[in-house]
Length: 285
Ligand code: ATP
Ligand code: MG
Image (cartoon, rainbow, N blue to C red):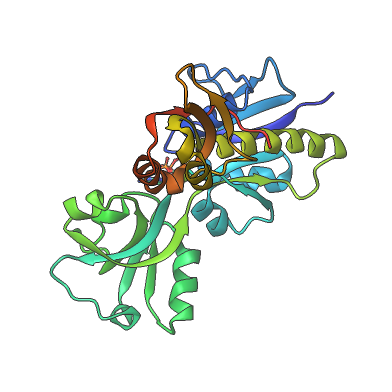
């Protein structure tokens, strides 16, 4: 059986989480120093380690079958590939920033200004939608220094915490695009590669589901059980087992991370004791 070829970033902000994702899916990959390619020893996959900017093009051309990139790079590249799945890591935003001392009264403040960016397509789409004419200066890196060296009045750049902007005397004034890492795929995958992709997606879903949930164990007096079970209706219904002490039970269930603290509080108020919360490694429904 042939290997599916997966392009991931060689080194950068996507690399570690991309590698971890495949590891958590039980797909081994060796990422030796300076290697450009690695064949998995336990799965029909080989990995290509590339610059992130090149990944959409390689996936479009079929040099790689799948790839992981930031949505910002995907959309900016305008390559024709399938967005297979959002992966939930490397979350960031593309924003307009201007010198700290200047004011911003909405998009019209950018009229006839010059804006430095590595994302000319995303920026011009935003400007067009808002009926603004501005001069876009495309530069490939260190965008944030452009205003201080007199190259541009504003920048349009990737932000996560905003500390890089701050240390360059800039302030974020307008978010124009939200991004996270995405799995992309060639539009004409072979039947064989489609079935390998299905396997990968099944595993990614199990890993993501597990990350969103926790296993919970607690003790409760039997007369409180109906109320407690009502709070933590899990995947099906909770497991209830008698404790050695008369009149008490142990309750096991699965809780969603997002409602977690509210539920823990409600459980304590309802009389639950000895609450244990345990991470789940994989979750197959
Ligand atoms: P390469 O050398 O591969 O071209 P790069 O320097 O272009 O790398 P990185 O800085 O590693 O790219 O960022 C890769 C992607 O990670 C970005 O396109 C974006 O989607 C995301 N990203 C960038 N900055 C951050 C951040 N501060 N926090 C989270 N995600 C980010
Ligand atoms: Mg890059």
